[in-house]
Image (cartoon, rainbow, N blue to C red; front, top):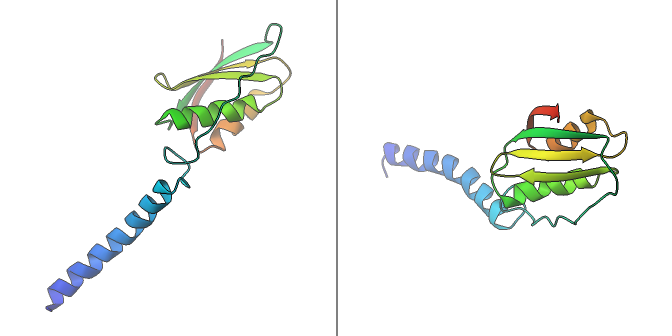
Length: 121
């Protein structure tokens, strides 16, 4: 084998090994997006009128699993009900208690998404 061929093989291995590892992780469902565990969003309703409603613009959602993950984790917050719109990359978050906006932002960003804007409606 020539030196040039060996260099080409080494470069290909350097490129392919991380790509293969990432693909295997994704296909095993261990990734955080799309191929990750399918999130189930339990229905949540709270009686009465919300104290505040936020419209949150979210960047980084790619699929229904991303949408479900954001919605599920927001709904785990006490006194909060959310509905995420994947097509618009937004979440409508109704707050029935004293939950601060910062907790809503934190919850979304802990799921590896970016909160672009959070405005009260």
